[in-house]
Image (cartoon, rainbow, N blue to C red):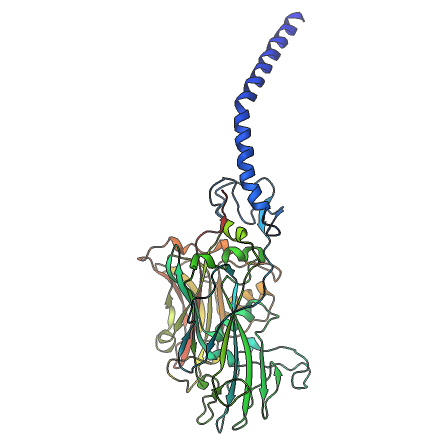
Length: 485
């Protein structure tokens, strides 16, 4: 027993010596970690209301390495314990006035000076106000079915009536462009106004961009009203179009990472609006409306530009490493009219940016539209009956099950909405269930493709005259994360 006691005593003395030596060695390490921790925590805690501790491991993929950018969703670095910093930036300032453009038919009007770039920008709102004066025999085209103000009671005294409008086609193309501090000259938005309105309604089933109509004769007055078709009638119209600068249907806390980061475009951000004429509304001979100022028979309509910006402090903005989101439109004609076939090329896609989704619309052209303008007379599911992405002429995925009806029903399930004719979505970031939100970090990594690689949208096409289509490639450039000292 005494021998064992001596052994324990010897080992105990050795353990104590090791512990003392270890403490002396590790003390500077612990001190350094404490200093680094204060560098990371104190600046973040000063952003009142912008960040909170949330038990959401993996939500933003924020790594624990100080002084570096943490790549979201890459899994390259471990999370900070069981909790992570999660942006709580779902609050917005609300629409703030930027500039006013003067409407000019068949002309592209541009902001005379740069838009404000001091903060992040989630949306731009375009607010049109003007008067239409009918010709002798107007026949207005129907608006897209997805823009029906479904079940809005009391319009024109008719409870539950549903109306749509072609007014959003007056904005032929909306372009947001500028010079990015890192990426140089870029165009994060290039879409037609009517398609923007359809996309907004598509991803928000209970929302339709607002319009108000005041007719001097006939029609249906009020919000979501119907344009009068009475000869020589005047119609005062007021409508708004939100222009998104982030991938729709993502989580509110993710938006600041994917909306436009104004300081990266300092003093060099502009908007162009291509104005159509009355032929996109009524192309019957003698029935095309003319335009004047709202409430007047002279002057010109106005287009006011407003911005909607997240409520982040300047310090909160600086800590976020943003992603640039792009909405780019490919206008499709020849393959839909005279090409076609199985596995045909619909369009080549852009490489060098990650692809979040491919949003497609197919139909027939509205006759009599002035050259240079576009309007869909009808939408159809019988033009492109299957579509899929392909790389170097090999399908990436969505090949066999991607018939138009199946993919449309799947998309409708994702967002909890009706399946409307004419739309197909190949979504790389989508999640199932109406209460789910999309994960933009799951975008297809087409940024890794070089210019000599083929990144394409292909499909089965039944070609016929007067068929047209649009493909919107939603792209992401950069990797989101938080910047730490």
